Image (cartoon, rainbow, N blue to C red; front, side, top):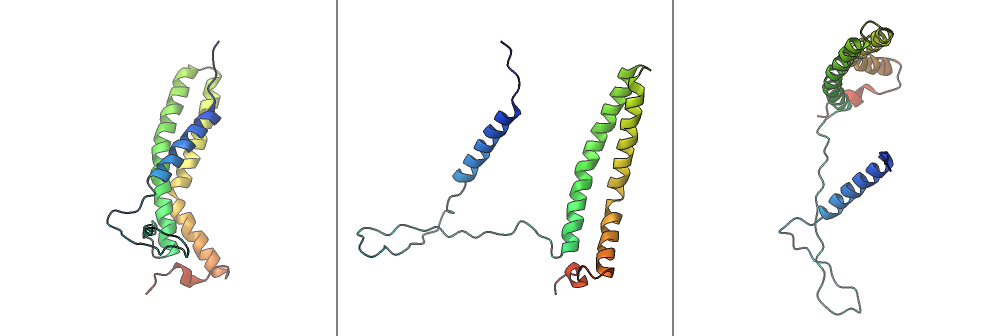
Length: 148
């Protein structure tokens, strides 16, 4: 009996793995010796309480910087995907051998070119949206300036 691939089972296994990694890595840093007082009426040694400092992973100082960092990341990922997409489209053209598949490959090529054009102009799109939102008064301009 041939079994089919079940993507939901893969998602469950990956979620289980990542949840276990999060539980295991949630330990107190070495060298901490914080203690909490024992509750009234209990006998024994106090249990240590770890002190953990969480730093923000976002290093941007303004929303504009954050937006441009996100756009840069999207451009990087999109450029890699675009290369693979054009390779795939090339295979579609070759495999069509002049038949009905050429029309489909041309459509794929057109949409890939449109996607790359949007990707290349994404910084301009973000800047236009920012200026439009500021000009209409929806967003305060101070939100996009660096704090002093």
